[in-house]
Image (cartoon, rainbow, N blue to C red):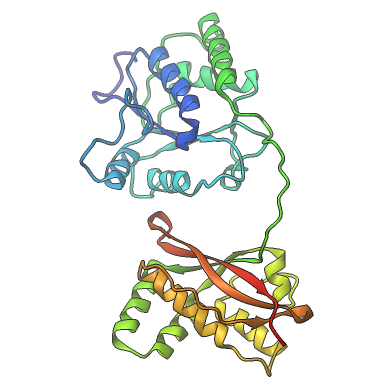
Length: 328
């Protein structure tokens, strides 16, 4: 940068899934080489870049780096990946109380994240887009917010910029994943339901288990567990085309009781006991309490997976409904 630059180097943060570290490496090398090392590049997956230090809290280090970030490049590959952590990084970087941060989405496939549909993104499979990014990076005085100097003294769209863009484009094409993921055929062996509660609600469940009756615990679970995901086969078990957005476990139980008013509902207590174990971070004990379902079938809801997601302040519970033939 020229003599008008501030005393501290600007910081560029590469937000990415670690499976895409090779793509992030190409971006980091381009930024570092073309800037002559005058930019701090934070890449958590690389031992040769600024990143989290051993022995310190990971999230605290990331928060500090994101708070000080001038530009964040979000490396976005395929829609069906879990982008929750990258979205958390974007949220921290653009916190209203933090210094201004520009987010640039590098789009590696035909789709972009819903949050960035309205902004101008960089299609890394397009030489035109790579040329535009390179030109802004090397010759624009406002590429980094709150800074008025250019990274280089090159002229906009000059030969040096065109050559740099062409090389960057070629290097990126070598490491990009297939534009379309290979289609696979699959089908669920059993109906699937995912429930979710906040970490604060999970604390309430644990406190109720210590101080109140099991009926009180079950009521808290039923009233607070949100249906966050399900498949069509689970919805068919409860005779609905789909669950309404924001539905809770208690709403699902009500649907079932309306359909089977004379059937025993011990499966509800069995499911709640498994969720309670999951909330307490213990292995659930299998409870074979059968529930009546359409076409005379019987199912037992079983908790298969528990996850705690600090970045989303929630816990999730994956439940499958195993089918049984009930003896007459």
